[in-house]
Image 1: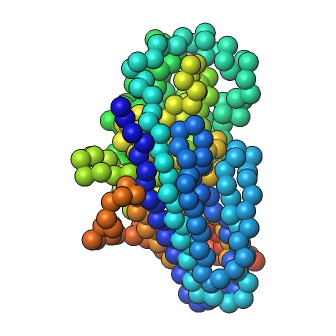
Image 2: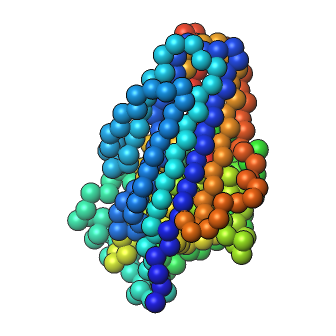
Length: 320
């Protein structure tokens, strides 16, 4: 009998500014969800400089924490710590395959229209249409088989390259480069699936990297994948970056139409300053000893944008 797996997660985000800035406003989505697939047993959030942190639930039920740091400062640090119990997933091979007609009936009876429409990062473009034609993607076979095949095809057709795109890159950048990060893989798969009328959504979270796993995505950053709606199964996870079906290693934090709904951090700062963002994520079984060496932090440097007249610069972290 398979037992539940429990993981400890630490997510450290650091922002540095030169020169100091006058104010920072930020919201974060870092608290893991509790649902039928997992339970968040503990969560804490620390912000430096010290400030009042408030929270609310967004439209999709994600926990959102937000804060304001007034006064001049040259750094902001956000540290979240979580303990998550992951429930054993269903074996897809043991469940009868559904038909396209059953999927259409499920969609007709439910309220899934938002997960069928294009989002900010999942717009259809001529290059996406070209890819769909190249893949000959259409409603053939059954929905589950199509999902498995598309995830494997994108894994083979696109390289993993953290330097190919940026956090705000449109879908065409990854299509041109035939490479990208998990954020791009998820957006491409979502955009293609919505064209064949499969409701699907973007998932922000973490992936546990065991020594025996050969994942392409790095262990030092947050992760992203997709969930598709299937009759009899509900929302089923697929990770095209690593060609995985959702597993006990996938820890969900937030869901939305695409990345625009669920960035781990989103904020603005007031001032004309160069900025540096560094992210360090560790995920380990809760009973495991602390690693002797931490993975390298993911670092992004940016100069002030001269197009921003009032000097309110934005900062978000790309999912790897």
